[in-house]
Picture 1 (cartoon, rainbow, N blue to C red):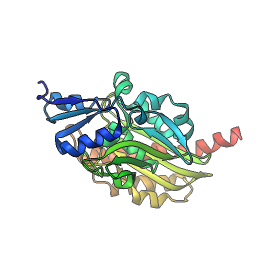
Picture 2 (picture 1 turned 135 degrees about the vertical axis):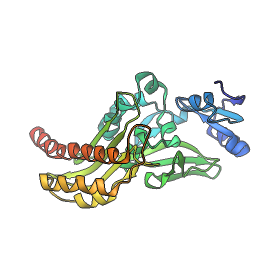
Picture 3 (picture 1 turned 90 degrees about the horizontal axis):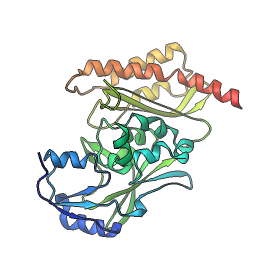
Picture 4 (picture 1 turned 60 degrees about the vertical axis):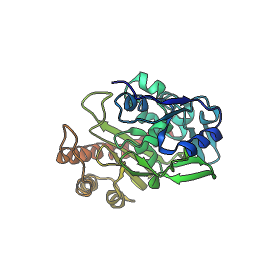
Length: 293
């Protein structure tokens, strides 16, 4: 199939983008990396009257430290994040997750902001942003506003962005020396959508975790925090009994949606497998930190 006819414009400023969004509303679509939009256009899953190409707006690019946060511009590519020294130092979860995203050609073109705004529940970046307690920076006719990741993903492919708003950047708290993270996913083959994935972050104190955030991808219409399991693990020493309880807790609190090849029970089991593999890394990370101190 070929895309339905549409008009194309490439504005030079964010204000011009916002004006076009105000004028055209839901009949407009933003083009960033195009890795999702071009496919949906060609399959006629999306038939906008206007495509707004934002790739010429330099202020939407870049990765920088701004005070207590790492700011990632909407047009930063997956590859930019994968090889950024700032990301490796201040948000290592993102560096760990990047190689799981599709294949190199897609990582070279696809953008962080596009992934967050599209809000695919099987995508890595929305899951990581939620696990990191990040914030979305939106620009609209009333100026800039910040939306916590916990409030941003509202449903299947839907977010808290207003029709006349643009996702300009995301901000992530800087990781400290006590920061612990884990990322893993299970897919039929590398580059496929994950059957189930998991991102987790916490403050490490010995073999215990505090402020734990466990987020699952591929199990529901949005990335899902395992809040019951987070509470169970808060401040506890991660011995075998605790890990076993946590796995049982996780499997009991999630209600996965099936996909074309996997049942809810399969996804529930695999989520437990990922957690069981991930939690013991806390002790090994503690030992490595002590060895280099």
